[in-house]
Structures are given as structure tokens and as C-alpha cells.
Length: 196
Image 1 (cartoon, one colour):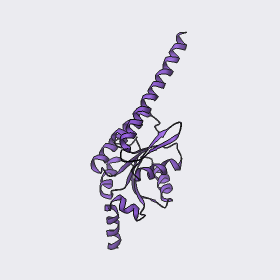
Image 2 (tube, one colour):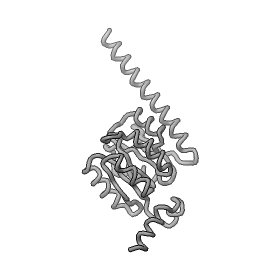
Image 3 (cartoon, helix red, strand yellow):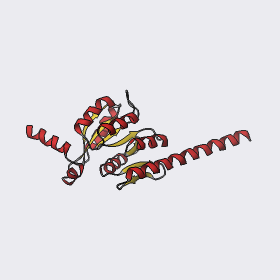
Image 4 (tube, rainbow, N blue to C red):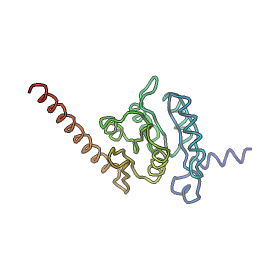
């Protein structure tokens, strides 16, 4: 039993690259206030040979200590949470465990939320209305130092490389600006029709 506990501690402390070479599972911590969602995601991720859920919580405060202690590779975070919202959670996780990759898992399909999440340090943004493969793609991309962004026309965009976060932020800004321009044009068209 003591050996097993020591091995688990060693695995948690081992650098990501070394653990990947040993084909050790990607360690994931899940924060979502809906128990049934957590159960489904844990079951779904647990069925994968390369992913292990090391913890879960219904709120951020309970999760922060566990994330600092467990040092998962990835934290999957909902945006709407009791006590502290997901955007604040991203800031807290980045401050306390900067090596943990963060994936936002939410129902909010909003360029403003994507933009804010990525700017705060999230490396993935996946909609709950998406598929299992969307979440798994995000987990694998973020584990491999990539960024996965939603794109309504193309599904998802994966950005890899040493400057992935910088390029992702620029891409999100472009998407947000384009989205607001489209929205503004729709409002202008509507007003033109109402006035005519």
C-alpha cells in the first residue's frame, strides 16, 4: 500500500513529457456543478485508455486545493458555478497551478466568453452541446501543448506549437470582432427594414 501511494505521488510530480513517454494516462480534474454531467463525463473519459479522471468537484473552492495537491494535467471547468464563476476559476487555477491546462466545458456559445476564457489562460473551449470527440480532442490537444477553439463553421480549430496561446488569442480576437460586426450588420438591417 505504501509503495502504491508513493508511485501515485511520483506520477503526479513527474514532468508531463516524461509521463507521456511512459504512456501514463492524461490526468484530468473536472469542475461542474451538475452531478449528472460530472458522472457522464467521468464515465466517458474513464472509457479511454489514455485518460484518467483524478478528481471532481461541484464548486471551485473545493476543487482548488485538490488541483494544487493532485497536479492534474488538465482541469475541465464549467463557466457557471456556485460561489465563484468559471472565469474567476481560470484565474485562480492559473495562479496556483500554472502548469495545469484548462479546458472550458460550457453551454455558452459566445465569442465574448471564448475570448475572455482564452485571454485568462484556458487552452480549450468545448460546448456541452458538442460530441464526445469534441471533448476528447480538446483533452488530447491541451495535453500536447495545443489549443482547441470552437468554430461554428468548421467544428473546432486546433492550434499547435510553441506560440499556440498567442496565436489562439489573436484568432479569438478576430472571431469576436467578426461576430460583433455580423451582429451589428443584422441590427442595422433590421432597423432599416423597420424604418422603411
